[in-house]
Structure formats: C-alpha cells, structure tokens
Length: 316
Image (cartoon, rainbow, N blue to C red):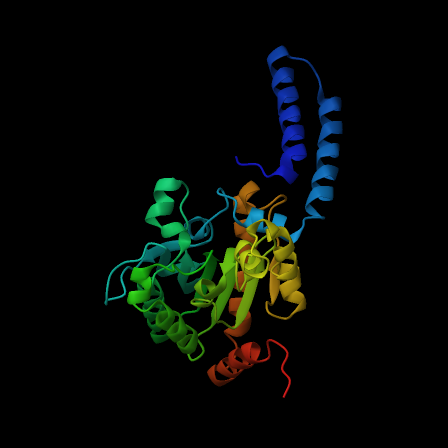
C-alpha cells in the first residue's frame, strides 16, 4: 500500500506490531503484554496524526490509489445493479458509471465517476475525467429515473472534466452546462456525495442535488491546488499553500453551507477500511432518501433551487 510521508510513523509501528505477532506465533512465545502496549501507542499516534491533517494532506488521502471507487461502493452497498451504457449520440464513456440498483428496499439510479485501480485501467477510465458523452449518458439515466420516480445517487470522484480537443469538439462545456440546468428541474430526489476528488466543472456536471455530502477526507474545489498555485504564483510547488486558501476540505465547506453533511471514514482514510466507510455512506444515503422523499415535488424543486442560489456573498 502506498504510504504518504505523514503516515510513515504509523506504518512503521504497524509493521513492528505485526512482526511481534508473527514472532510470537512462530516461536510460541507470549508477547501479548508488549503487543497491547504498542497497540495503545498506535491508537494514540493515529489520533494525533489524523486529527491534525493539513488541507494538502487531506487532498493526498483523497487521491490515494487504493481509495474505494464508485464500483466498490456499488458492490458494498447495493444489490441487483444493472449498468447502462452510451449517450445515444456518440458512444460510451467509461469514466462515468451509470445504472440502476437497490439500496436496502429503495430502488435508485446510481451515477458516479470511475477511476482505475492500475495504470491500464486508469487509461481505460481516462483517470476519472469524463467526456461530454459521459455527461449526456448521465442525464439520459437521470431522465429515466425521473420517469420511474426513482431517487438519484451521484458519486463524485474526478480531477475535472477531460479538457482534450476531442471533448471540446463534441461540446464538453455545453454538456456540463445542460446537466447543471436540467438537474435543477428533475422531479425526483437527488443526493450528491463527493467520495474522493471533486474537481471543478467535472464534478458539477453531476453535482446538483437536494443534499450534498462529502467524505471526511475528500475535497471539493473550483480548481486543483497545483492548478491554483500555477496560476496565482506561477509555481505549482506552492500547492500546499493553495490547498489551504482554497477552503476545499469538508469542514471548510460545511462551515460555508456548501455541503450538508460530512460522512466519517475509517481511521486513516477509506482505503484503510473500505467496508466500514461504505456502510457509513449507506447509512447517510438511506437517511437522506427517507427525509427528502417525503417532500412534495414543488417544495423539493424550490428547496433545491434556493439551496444553490444562496451560496456565496453578493453586493449590489
């Protein structure tokens, strides 16, 4: 497993504990007392490290290559998932997963960015950067969900929409803009969750909903810290300073009323406890589906509009 610099003391202590356990088992020696002391030390060290993470360190966790993706959460918290492909205009975009599933007794539409688990799959998935056909596919599935009165679950995890020439030629900006516009008028509940990276328009293309949730170590921003640093200071190495001023972490965005809830992750990040983190997501989704499904459609649409309309500070 990849280890960030701030996690190194934790990983080294975990290895020491595992070595003691292996030695104890191989040599039939009782080292339980020493192991218990180290376990206590490890717990304290984790609490100390993860309670003081900087915004940039949280960005690193959000980008961890072993962090759960949309397909992982589909596997952990849904059943009977039926994937649907294609935008009926150009083709299939594997950077966006779309389909229908069940979460407990709720039938839902699931839409989410999908990164790869290795280099080959990342190339196939375009590193989670969707093309215009991906956003058009997403809206096609949302329209179907509206037709059958199914709640829509959107899982955001992208550095941003793909900025290549082909994507621009096929109408990337228009596809995202139309999705933002049309999601405001969908007559069914929409719950958005940032599960990893929430990058710019790539995130907003499936990011309009009645509730916006974020995982504890995810980030949501108009630009990446590296991109911001390159523009403001002409120096991408100032990414840590950029991450701080962008206010891109979950606590920052909850304080600014841009999101509605922070979903806790397993200790050390979702990659260290995928099933535990997935169950936390499932609990939050069920709670919000039950809550907003009770609202009359007219009230739902008005609250959705007002929710985004009040973001920001305006002077006239």
